[in-house]
View 1 (cartoon, rainbow, N blue to C red):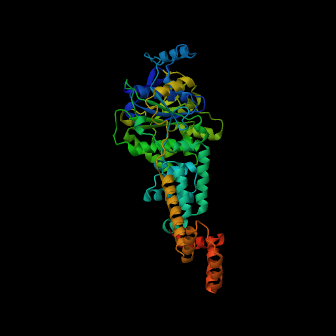
View 2 (cartoon, one colour; view 1 turned 90 degrees about the vertical axis):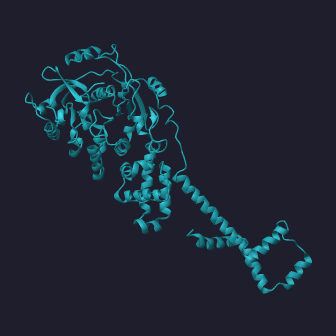
View 3 (cartoon, rainbow, N blue to C red; view 1 turned 180 degrees about the vertical axis):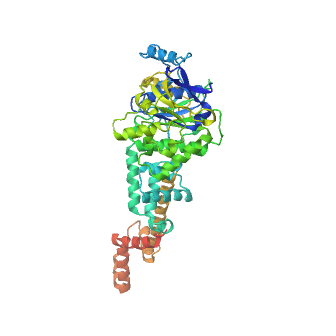
Length: 515
């Protein structure tokens, strides 16, 4: 266990080591830089450092490279010699290769253990963001969640929400008097967006068993923090689903974890890769929510690190809360790029030895401009830093190695099989079936209650379904039949027929419509 994490070497000759203090690691951070400048390796060495310090980590593997954390680096690797040279240059004398405890997760259940939450836990705000709903459609969604609570209808998976929306549409007139206008057009739009979400593979996200946050905060037998890796290469095909899931997870940590003040080290570190996806076209209410979580979650012992190409991707109010910064190279090809580069440089505490703006433009692959929080949370002076080499494998492991690790994981079998217990869909279906049976029973009772039909049915039952024939009786009956009896016979005949039954159903439909 260490009190800090080695980032690399700084100064003119890179001999001055740069560290991230664990006591300030929950003050959040930023890893930024253009494509191909070394952000993934920086993320890898930070995950290693936190794990060795006994801090669990959650990160998303966008490119598939981070699975190498589960396997030790090798002297046979082509970069072994450059790694050893770099370790010597920055004074990393105890550099060794080693593997780290890893648990793989996957929303689709292909490259990791399935990750699920319920519709209720997701909530209307994040679900509206995921479905890209308008304000009016979001209002309908809020009504659905309110009704689910009032009617005792658990919303666990998408079919629960879909069936509840159908029920709302059928009772729109009555609900509009209570909650405001409930339009069928808005309900239809939400249903179509749910269909799009299904086509993107979002069905697997909702259901049970839901992810227990305690399973993300485990230590191995050596006291090292578990590194939880979310397979995100396929998930990136649905960027809205990716961003909403990570934001939900962050919100759940904020809601469930207790206050711990300023701990000696974080209870969990959360890396949010491709952070721009969270803020692109995000409504103000959502940005405010992220800002609130980022501001307050550090007191729960959780550090949040945003990873993006440009610091400008992160809103200014949130960027100001990111105290630990690792800035890889930024390219300035356009006037907009130069402006953003200048703005990024202005956020650092100046170093008289060089100009920060020029340093950000000039650092090479595997180098960065860094500033870490120091004593009393004061930002350190910006330094050009040579990033330390990783101890785990650089690059992905094989599919066979991944499958073996999943089979040996403590999470094997816990989330693999979905559970479909009684919820809104089953309850509403049961109510509809009961109402249909009651209506049919009432219709039958009404038909049996007619005196003429009762007499006719009695005769039919007596004769085994056939009316007995007697020539003499028929003759007598025909002679004694009155005009009223003839009319009654015609009515009975019509009631027995298809037209008569339609009339009876029409009357009963009016009587039992309210029911």
